[in-house]
Image (cartoon, rainbow, N blue to C red; front, side, top):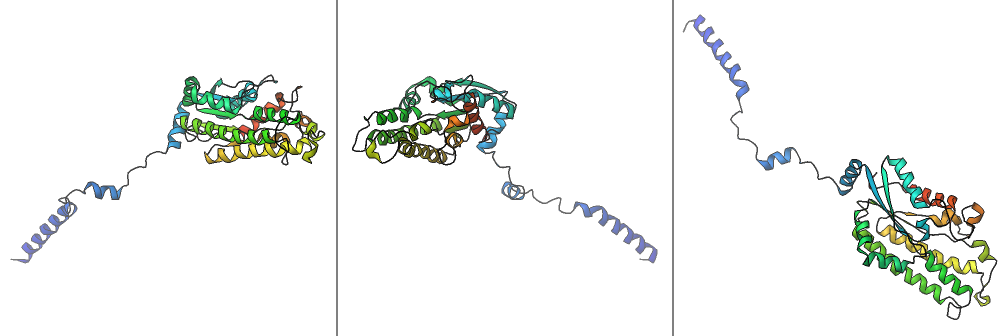
Length: 293
């Protein structure tokens, strides 16, 4: 082969190689599904909380069910904490709040438990709610307090009815929380509880209804009230339900401040006035709005 022919042959060989080079590997078999999955992991399934927040963002209104006694009804005030809390929530989230207030004046923990267990209308309301608040127990202790003050509580120290009231409340409260959480998961709704205040600090501090107690009425009642409030806090925490510290807001960090001196009480000195209900609504607002916002 002459030099000129050899050079031309070499040029054609190099040209062919350049053309074919990008095609190398095109005949490889496609990756299996397992290999593809290893290369690009599948997106994770959204959590319940993420799905709940997405649903809340899509809603133009939220259903709010309030459970409780005369605090829930707003007795003694122009507007109770339930509607004040709904207004705050609406302002903070930009969402319309549809309130269904199931509060009943004079309601006890036992009666609330029965309503939730046996009343299908109440159960359905809870099941469909995006917001639920619960306050109960004040009437339980107020009745026991009256028995103690009139000498009819029972026992050598005249405190049997107070002990029994705390025990009964704890059982009823646990049943209420179990039912509510079973009907509407705390992971899918704004569920909040409140403890409750002592309306009679100054009155009870000046009274010793049972001389053998070695303590004034305030010191006696404080022990049982704090047992109830501690149980509310502990059991709410166990269910992942935030609780508003109304007792501290009304009675101070040591429980020895009279809420009347703060301007929180209505003329009957039992129920909150508008300022008192506004304070309860602020405590609820301070818990934020998880899991919806």
